[in-house]
Image (cartoon, rainbow, N blue to C red):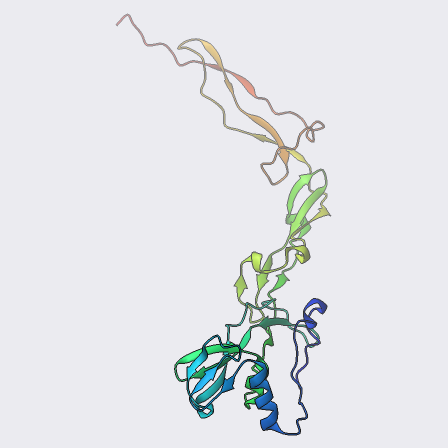
Length: 254
């Protein structure tokens, strides 16, 4: 028989199980149940013993029927992550109904059991699929990784969330608390500051005169466009201003 040991302690006390009961006379037991719940019958009518009118309407004992009514299963307490020792669970409510012809009334569940109707299961395990897991690739080579400071670079690797069949899904479906690192520092002697220069501007000189050209100069980490602060201070500084002559002026005497 399936047990409820997987349930949280707070729920185990709320689920009752119906074991076998020893009855000297099943019919006497059934009649006692009927009387205790207000079903006093004559040949034609099922009545309230306190004289408040018909409970289920007119009918004989043979026309009295019982059935179980059930709600839908609740959502699973966990959608994945099933193991041999833990899983999620779903619950539902059941109600015994007594019916005479087309009139129905809720009654104690013991009456359905006494009528030979086994109580439906009110709790079941669920969440039997494996949860998506993090998968990661190899680290990039440090020598070719992006520099971020003197002699140090960031190695990177791909980290994705996958189902057990290999399908890549949104990272939101994996536990972000256990996500592997996708970046780490590494030593790279090639990570040093280098000067990065732009193109020369147009000469500012008028015709027949003298002017200058300029260009942008920036210290960046080797192999990147990321500013490297004063990492180039030991390197020769390229010129950023150069004198230039203007074109000859047109001959106005002609």
